[in-house]
Image (cartoon, rainbow, N blue to C red):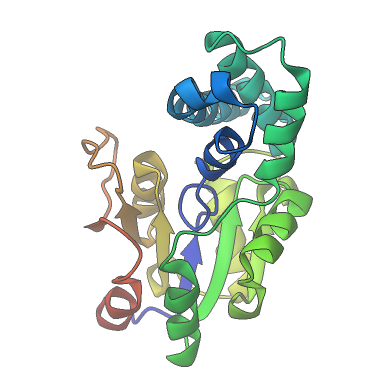
Length: 229
């Protein structure tokens, strides 16, 4: 079947999760952060994801905001910055204002111009996603913003991917699913979506039960992939 809907993961895919630490490091008086911000951003994201998987496996669901805070606390301690409470608050505030990757607005607008439905499917809680979409100014190019809070489990659990069909009334093979997480793109491929992995870092492919159909360096080719899938 032809692709009808393009669905995007949010954090790391549309929105640059490193931008909070990068912006804070550029502020006056942040010399200690400036020396380690890349390590902090990497550890923050890794722990955020790890905590979501562990909670899903253990049946201990919480909001994504909670795992975001927990991941930051681990990262701050790993960098020796746990005593700086003002830095913690600043980083958390900036997470509500994440920058979109440069190609995102034009890519989404092109999809809408070509008649595709568009959506976010994210671990993020609704209020977090509203903040990110508003800050990036891409709300007019999205038909839906779907949060795992409606099903109470994090990706890659099957009920999360079920949300797309429930919202749009589509078959899995009518969906192009796009994620910067290799494991997410792989799991969605195993579910039946056509998938694209945005591998900005040039990482190896995850060894899982399925694999992404497309591997990209950024989101620019998405409209063409959707048109020709």
